[in-house]
View 1 (cartoon, rainbow, N blue to C red):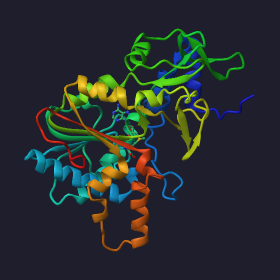
View 2 (view 1 turned 60 degrees about the horizontal axis):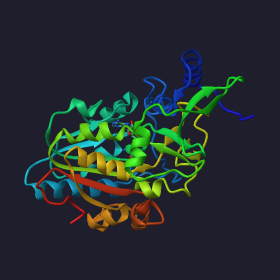
View 3 (view 1 turned 90 degrees about the vertical axis):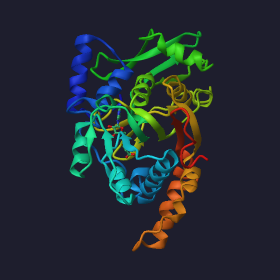
View 4 (view 1 turned 180 degrees about the vertical axis):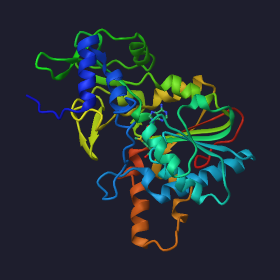
Length: 353
Ligand SMILES: C[S@@+](CC[C@H](N)C(=O)[O-])C[C@H]1O[C@@H](n2cnc3c(N)ncnc32)[C@H](O)[C@@H]1O
C-alpha cells in the first residue's frame, strides 16, 4: 500500500469527490495549486533554494540584469516607454531585480492569482493584480518565467485500442486517492492532439493544457503594441508527445526535491508539466501576435549581454558560477526555451535580431 501524508486540503478534496464523484486531473491540479486558502501557490511558497539544490532563473541577479536590458532595448526599438507586465511573478524577487537595474523608474505590474504570492510582491513595493483582465490595453513588454508550466493540465492516455481516454481522480474503497480512466471530459482534448498531428502510442500517457488558449488570448488583448516573452521548459508537440515519452511529463516538487506522486502532500507540493510550445505558438498567432523568436535561454541571455553583468563587490568566481548556471546548456541554458511574439509591424524583439 502507498503511504501518503494526509493534509487538510487532501481531506477537503476527498470529501468533495465522495460527494460529487470523480474530478478531472485538471480540476484536481487546479485545487492542489490554487485552492483559495490551502493551494500550494495560494499559500505563497518560497521558490528556489539558496543551497543550490533547486535553481530557478528568478533567483539570479544576472537574469534580472538581462531582462532589464531587454526592456530597455525593446523601448528603444519601439521608440516609446513600455509598461512592464510580469505574469506569475512568484515572490517578486525577479521584478524587484529588474526595476533595480533600470536607470529610471518604470511602470511595472505583476499578474498574480495567488494571494500569498501577491502579498509578498506587494511587500516588496511591486504593483500586482489578480488576472490579466484587470489591465487595459497599452504598449507593453509582457513576460513570464516558469508560469505556463504551472497551468493545470488534463491527463490523457491511449487505451491501447486507439481510443483517447482521460484520467479522473477518484477515491478507492480504502479511502485513498487513485486515478481512473474515463471518456474525455471535452472533445477539445482530441482536437488539440489531432490539430498537432499527434497520435499517442498504445498505453502512452500525456498532458494537455487547454488553459493556454484563453490565457494567451487575454494577454494579447492588453498589448496594444509590444512583445510577449515566455521562458519555460517544454517542447514542440511532436517531441513532447513522441511515443518514447510514455509516461508524459507530469512531476511534483516537495521541498525542492522532485517526486512523482501528485496525491501525496496535497497542497504542500508543486505539480508541473512540460509546456507544449506548438499549442502556445498557435494560441499566440490566433490572438493576432506574430512569432518573433525562439532560442535556448543560454543563447538569448548571451545575446542580451549577460557577460557585461559586472556588479561591484561580487566575488568573480561566484559571478562566473551564476552565469554558468543560467547559460550552460548542461544546466539551465538549454533546460529553458525562450519564445517571443510581437504585435504587427514592429521589429524583432531584443536578443533575437
Ligand atoms: C513556478 S512559479 C514561478 C514564479 C516566478 N515567475 C519564478 O520564476 O520564480 C509559477 C507562478 O505562476 C503563477 N501563475 C499560475 N497561474 C497563473 C495565471 N493564470 N496567471 C498568472 N500567473 C499564474 C503562480 O502563482 C506562480 O507565481
